[in-house]
Image (tube, rainbow, N blue to C red; front, side, top):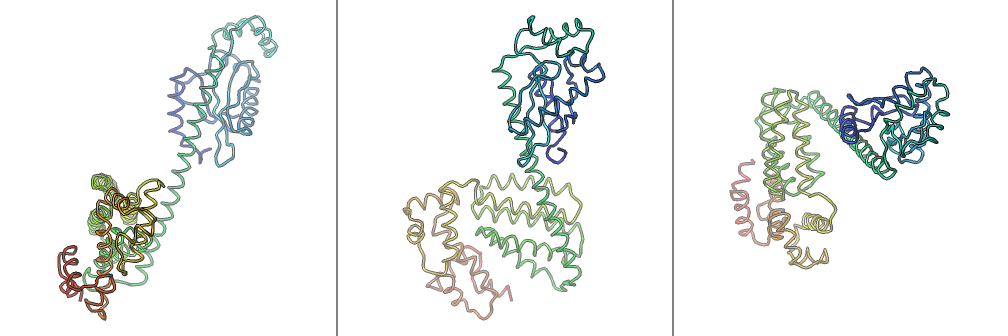
Length: 419
């Protein structure tokens, strides 16, 4: 149960539930043992009196044990009369198909106590001599209709299941984060041992940085994952492990990633908000691995947002369109080809790109071609004309014009800077 639930959070919820309903509530394990109960939540006077008799505590525990097992078996709230004769229900705590305990709630009556009830009460509690006192305590129990009891139990069942799923999700995320942190730590150790200290400037680092930004603009998840980890290793080596330099470069890189994500289709306001959250988090950490984890995490988050939430039909079409363009950019493709591949109209495809990526289909095709041209620039054996042809431009002069528009310099000038 410790692993399945956030105890403090559940206690707050249980406390609020008790305050709202006026009902007693506690959590028990499958042995019927009290696991925890909220502060300022007290048992009814009836139950306190019953438990003042030594053996009755064990009887309460046994009632809870049986109820918890039954609730777990049926995976739904289980209503019962405890050994003392009052109404209680158990809401199962189900984790990955197995019951780990239950939430006990109630200590009420479902009808006005009459002579028959008091006869039963006496039979249930034959060992208690002060029956008049017990009867007096029973008269103070709250009376709740069956419909209300069912509604309260169902609500509690929904809340408990939500909390379990929420905590499992948190635990899974923590495991994923822990594994990623271990990988980052191991990569840094490997880089130190391999003696990859380069004597020159940050040129190789900046080249990989440009690649990363290109992959983000194009939404290439696999290449982003591989490139960013390699890039962070380079940064660590180049900075000589200096935390101040690494922190500065990490914040700088995050800013560049956010702009590339906006170019890739992320909403600008959302990008700014995510960067504000990132800056708050990065200010809290003072550990190199944590710097790198935060930058990896924000890059992954940006990419998830680029691809938009959900599996709606138009989102699926958009993803297929992007993949088709990335796979066929070297061919003379146009919007007609993309629309035909998806079996949709050109106008519908144009609306998708305008709405989700804030660009036309042809703009996106051009963007992909320019990004791919930048990658090919480092291959010295290829001429500018060769590169132009390889990325789908028929005219070198038009390629030069488009390249300058996107990169701010002509292809020849850009290549000269590389070598």
